[in-house]
Length: 359
Ligand SMILES: COc1ccc(-c2cc(=O)c3c(O)c(OC)c(OC)c(O)c3o2)cc1
Ligand SMILES: O=C(O)CCC(=O)C(=O)O
Ligand SMILES: [Fe+2]
Image (cartoon, rainbow, N blue to C red; front, side, top):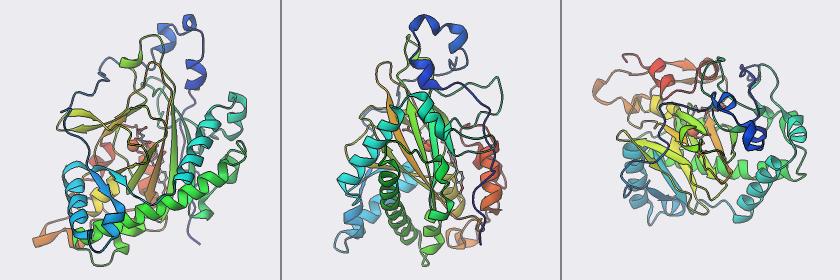
């Protein structure tokens, strides 16, 4: 049997941010906040306001009478943006409504109840924080619940909240739907890339993990100088993000500026991850993004990360290296790749830099 994702390494323990944000204003002294406040951050989106992330209609993409036109939109979105919003994805409204309600209800529980699914030393699953590797690095203004969701044998039930009582069922239904969407998008990307065997790409949706992000409102005028999530590219195949709250926060780096990806009701935000950059030998590039926080509103999002299963490898596909082009990225086992990503700081495209053959 293939290895399961376990003992992959963890984070140094840091304060719970929701608890910190709920403290009386006079307790949030500069001494307390200094681990979060950055000198170099301008949280405003400063990109071209007219430039908005492309939209891909999945029902049209799968419909033989419109598919070609929508496939061209997908191709342009992957080549030029690395990010797009997916509409008509077929995830039933009730599945989305239920998962949103249960994620919000989980974070609404008292800290002691949420702590029942706290991360354990050396583990990335559970409730806590990620990518804290030194005592002096700047911290993100967010708490995270991280779970392996697919395949079923990757799940560790002790990290799945028992409350609200419907949590596991809601997340299970959402997870299956989103894995289907990811597989369809990857199959369409394979066709666009001239990769006849779609499994060469769809296998990178064989496993799924979810990073559920809770960004408390940041009081005391500090919101413009902290980040909810540091700039990073997703070190996976394809991410599908649900902006649970109607509060903007996601920004992508485009032509050197930050462009906001405002929530569209019912949409999923898709982004090309580092693994697709490797498999396509750089034809589709992963894009740096970050989350900013609101001074007044809490925000919840859930990123569904899709990857290959343990036991496989990542390497540029022959079909994407035309005219004898050499591979620009190393070949690596899925397991070594995951260990590398979890031992790094969350910092721009640092994983891709490590994977490049001639950086
Ligand atoms: C197949 O095994 C795994 C795949 C992915 C991950 C993983 C866990 C994370 O916590 C994580 C993450 O927090 C993250 O930051 C936003 C990220 O983008 C850089 C990840 O790619 C990521 O991947 C673990 C195991
Ligand atoms: O909260 C967001 O909008 C971004 C989340 C994200 O980038 C991630 O979890 O990888
Ligand atoms: Fe991300």
